[in-house]
Image (cartoon, rainbow, N blue to C red):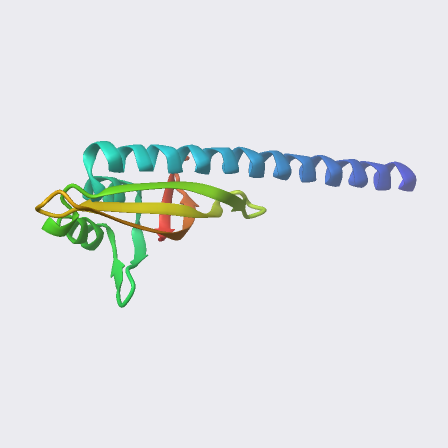
Length: 145
């Protein structure tokens, strides 16, 4: 009986480990899909709408010398005239997810393009890092960008 119990525990541990791995892989795919949808919304509807939509209610955004806290601050920041006509493109190069599959992070490259009043385009490139949190409804929202 003792051997059967040990076998059962070993089998249960192996199965639950596989389930966690499967959940993690699913969450990774979901986060990448969310990143793609986020970037598409930024392109189509603007930075303010996209960043405020994909922000968790307690999100924080690091913008160099200060940090924006919450959806309203993020929305207001991107409503500034300096972001009118801005083109922001990004793609995650890496995604990782917690064992519980409810937190994850991405990083990758971005390109930020603007045009001045004469039509001269300025392009800056860099790296981003975003932390994602799974919501109660199953969607992903960023908590740090």
